[in-house]
Image 1 (cartoon, rainbow, N blue to C red):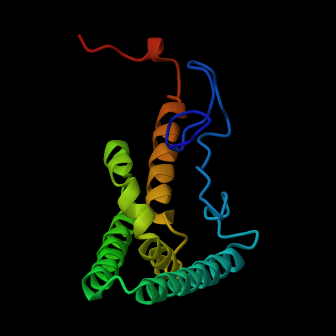
Image 2: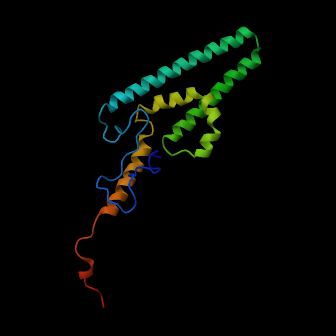
Image 3: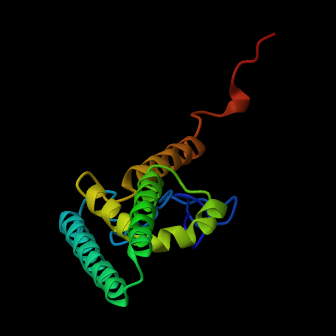
Length: 173
């Protein structure tokens, strides 16, 4: 949802006023509104997001490896080490799935809040979801485009005017 007006793809104008421009597209993270016409460096931004998310995921895996080595040095035992690996793997898989599904439908805010901890632990999955999604589109572009097109169609329906004076039309008797 747009932060400035609380609606999807609709202009921030008072009710009853006319807006010749129509609905405005909602900006995407890292892309702004370049996703609408694929202009102003859209391809370069997609490549940058892909490389950035892959580099961040690789760096995160390196940090997790260092943490795992720290557990081995501390000699906490095989069970704790295994538990840590399984926890990060499961949380990353769940975070990947949640992020991927969020590109196609708006997530429920209450569910999003309840999954905040899991998503923080599985941040590698979120980064990988961004990486893979940038091969087909800007992450979330399909959802935003559908909402924006729907808002434009509704705006056109509201603003089209009837031709002629309705009081001069023949009435059936």
